[in-house]
Length: 342
View 1 (cartoon, one colour):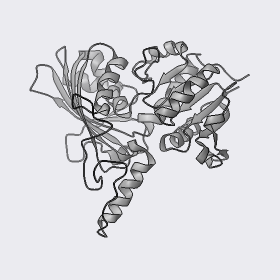
View 2 (cartoon, rainbow, N blue to C red):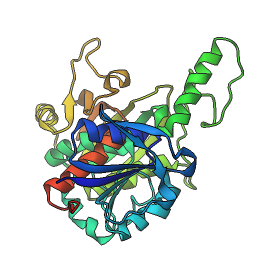
View 3 (tube, rainbow, N blue to C red):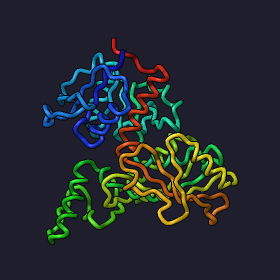
View 4 (tube, rainbow, N blue to C red):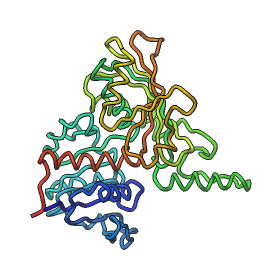
């Protein structure tokens, strides 16, 4: 016996990746429903090599009897429908920002804080962290266990797929238009993204930070615990898939580079690729379609007493979104925290 699984936001970039990941990882599905807004009803989405799902209306879907909801329909839609699904007995794993800082909703990266899953019964909702936070804490966790993270300074270089299919379309259109002298049409970003970088993701806050930068700070503390100080500068770059981060970490305890390397090599979901030679590092182009978080350029930071610096990349649609959500579902199954369909 398997599970009845509903995927909300199924026609979006992350929703499609969730459906693809469920099939690839052979999650035990008895029945699966693809849900989206009314305008997408009737579209077809492949689930594995032999099944085609017809999109159904999220607004009118009855979640009674469904075991698991994987949500990525946008924060407003999740706010309306995730509690409705949870009230019907469906455990929701939500990929939007809607519930991440709710004290009764666990914010989970399975390799980092699986113990938080036991708290999902308070609201029957589990939050998937922000994509940039996920890959950073994946790299930080094995180092934190050794030396205790005190402060993090991070600059992100985030792919346009973080803004959805529309963001990818805008980069594609502007790139083509550059070669025929078209005036760029700006809809998804605040300035042209083709052949440019934009130090602005999400809304500005009163202190001058953007909400994306704020998310990285507060989510890191919620996931890893303690009072870790985080200052982020989040930048949109003309890359389709794959977020990159330049991370500088100050620790409480004395660091040892060899121990740090060994911890990263052994960490689940992390691959250390640090050749210290031309090409001895991983770029976002190489990580697209991959599940791991890749760490390169690991070195001592001599400007603070206990510092390390590194570069990390990860596919933001997979580990940064869809894969992490499916791994949460797998962890619920492994811990016997998810009911099976009758």
